[in-house]
Length: 237
Image (cartoon, rainbow, N blue to C red; front, top):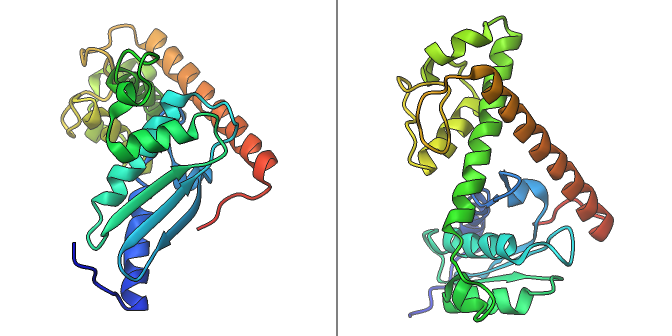
């Protein structure tokens, strides 16, 4: 591939686009961007379009399947940015870092990266976390509506378009879309994230949604605290 030297301004524009792309990569369990969590410790774009990204996690023992998803998703997101010539994404300070980094670079998949140990790719795991994200998102949207005076027992009659506009509604819509669930304004506000079918027991469903959100946000707080304790800084760029 022919090398193209960019001006500092052009390199800065690519860096901004790369950072924006990294902002679309989520911790699958916490449903938050790696950039918000402080997991991106280093991001550099050279003048010839080479991108180097370094990731770090709260502990040395974070689950390797979660870690693999974050490294692979980062690689894919950055590779799709116009102007990027080559990509290097490295996980650091993790017990399986060398295996994960090598597997992602070789595009081996999770099973190919851990031969004899992993038996399945991570699609089912990703879908399971997306379903949890839909539940947590349902709590964010519906809890605000109930607080504003909406009767919880009428929520099953409402559509996604009836929910207040805002980041929480669009986040819920996005997660539903990723799962292939109905996500238009005329689609039901509340649905079963596993089947896409209507919810009949709204009280139980809202309770599960609340529990999922609280658990997710508690884990997020723990991870942020552990990352801060491990590295002593919130994030770098």
